[in-house]
Amino acid sequence: AQGHKSDLKACLKHGQTVQGDRKHIQQAQEWPTNVCVNPGVCEEDPREDQEEPCKKPEKDGQRGNMSEGSMRNLVKKDLGMTPYKKIRLQLLSEATIEKRRERGRILLNKLKSGTQGPVFYTDEKLFTVQAVYNSQNDQILAKSSADIPVKVRGVFRRQKPKSVMVWAGVMSDGKKSPLIFVPEGVKINKEVYLSMINDQVLPWIKAEYGETFFTFQQDSAPAHGSKLVQEWCKQNFPAFWDKFTWPPSSPDLNVMDFSM
Image (cartoon, rainbow, N blue to C red; front, top):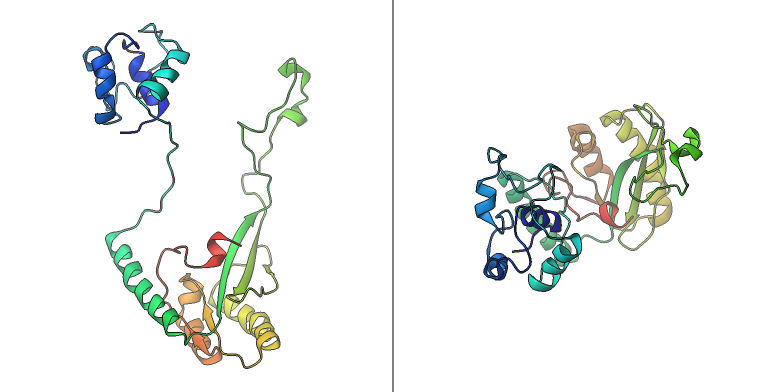
C-alpha cells in the first residue's frame, strides 16, 4: 500500500527505528496505510480514543530516536514508497452515474453516425477579479518580518470579491465565438439567457456559417433546461442536444470545461 510520508512519520515517531524491527518494515507494504508500524506502542497511546491515534500526533516530544533524514530514507529506500497528494474527485450518486453512462452512449452513437456536423460547444464561467494567493509560494525575503511594511506583507481580501460572468463558445472545427460579458449583478435566468443567444449568439453563427448544418450544445443549467429555452433551441438550430441528452454534473465532454 502507498501512504503519505507524514502518516508513516507520525507512526514511526511512536517508537519504531530503522534497525529496531526489520520484520515490521518488510511487511509494511502489505499493511493498510493507516496501520502503525509499531502497533504495540500505539495501543498505549493516551490518544487511543481518536479514530487514528497515529495519524497526526500532537507535538508532545519525540517518542523515538529516528531523525527526519532516516525516516525519509526508510520510506523511499527500505519501503519503496512515494508520498502522493490526494486528488479532488466529483461526488456522484448511483443515479447520476447511470444517467451519464446511458447518455454518454447516446452521444457516442450520434457522433459516430456522422450526422451531427460541427458541434458548437458553449459554457459560462464566473471569474473572480481577485489575485490568486498561495501562502507556500508567495513569500517575501527579509531579515526580519518587522522590516516588511504591512501593505507589502498583507494579502487583502474582500468578503464578496468582484466577479464577472463570461459566456463563450467554440465550434469543433476550431472557430471561437466572441466573448460575451454579462453585466455585474445580472442573474442569468431563462429570459436573460434566451435574450443573449437570440441577440448575440445566433447572429454570429449565421454570419460565420450561413446555412451550414451544425449541432448546438449547452449544459443542463437551470436557465438552459427551461422549457422556454429548450423549445427556442429546437426551432432555431439545425440540431440540438436537449437536456435529456447531455450527461449530468458537467463531465469533461465539453472542451470548454478542460481546455479553454
